[in-house]
Length: 361
Image (cartoon, rainbow, N blue to C red; front, side, top):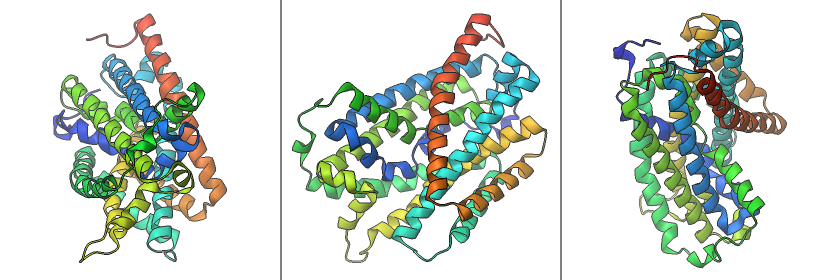
């Protein structure tokens, strides 16, 4: 697949795109989920999940190199045009559902922590207008937003972790490896969903200039986010007791309450506002992938596909309830596991055995 060089990004930007794809609202609450069974050993599950994602990055690059295109080109080469597009449709639906899941989670945080009476439709519309504006500028703009979502928030994250570490009880991490294998696997599974997002590489691969040179940046991006999630988990485990952590919905957000300055008392307002940059970058990347896929599958202009998915997102957010949210989150979790960590490796094996596509490198 040939993409004009003017629309491509430099290899080093893949580091920031991968970071943006993995760091979302999940980092604010995943600590509670993974400690339900693994307890104080949950941080080990995060590291293990990060290692599995590194393997998945290698699988995706190896698969995409065979056709020098995106996942739709892979499916077309493997199964033909009609059935290939049919299979690709499921992945595009996943991207769209994942973006809605992120949007719903962030809206809930805004309504609980900042503006309880602000209507859902207004928040979702404002965010989606911003996302639409980013995507309409092309993939280079999406990559630029991903870059900024890394630079500015890191300063606040460093401040956030400094304060709880001053009063941390590292004895909370002992004894190490005190939980069963099944409990650890449960922590790995929950961590895999939290640090998901690298699968967008399946769509933006053709937009990387010299993709071979971007491999190391992709792996470094996963390494950085894995260490960030591990640090976040350790900070929560050493700040809260295990029982406290199991009952705190947003552990990382709750930590912000201890940060106070003479000129700023409610640090969490600044922190949540900063997260708008991160959430916008993540949703933009997911919806760009989805709309780009719908464009190729249905032979339509991407701006129309983007407009439709944006409107659907706003409507779903407006009429969603706890049942709908749970259904969407469950669907995204299951699709992420079965499509990307089971189906994609099997697809690579299929290509390798039958020598389909462009076997370069």
